[in-house]
Image 1 (tube, rainbow, N blue to C red):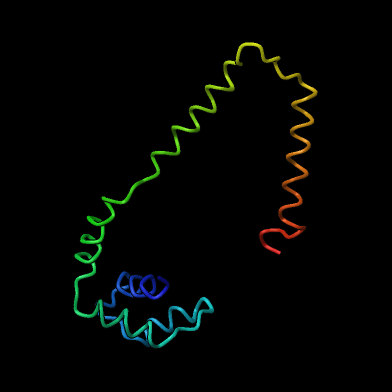
Image 2 (spheres, rainbow, N blue to C red; image 1 turned 90 degrees about the vertical axis):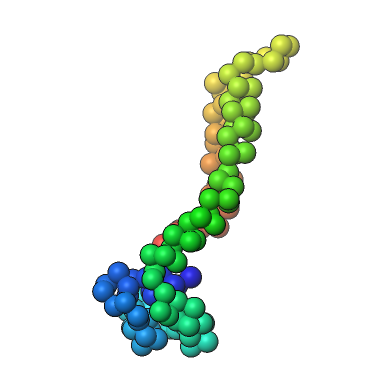
Amino acid sequence: MRYVAAYLLAVLGGNTSPSSKDIKDILGSVGIEAEDERLNKVISELNGKDINEVMNSGLSKLASVPAGGAVAAPAAAVAAAGAAPAVGVSPTTKSEEKKEEKKEESEESDEDMGFGLFD
């Protein structure tokens, strides 16, 4: 994907047919070392093609990809269940909610094992 992205950056910069050196320069500017085999594959596949036509043909293929509509149904069911408590179930007290929040916070701190995102 990084090779395609670098190829697209070169095309957007005005180079209609980027060479492997052009792509290596782009990737090298962000500290990525290019593999010649993969780089040559991308160049051979895209060489001589109009990049806008390639992207438009790819968009039609993406139209058939599911977009995660099934996620909303379970979330709505959980929200509805929380809004109306079941008959015979005692409502949760504030102290119980605080205990649950504290428990969740301690679990989250254990999961990252002391490492931050940018450490």
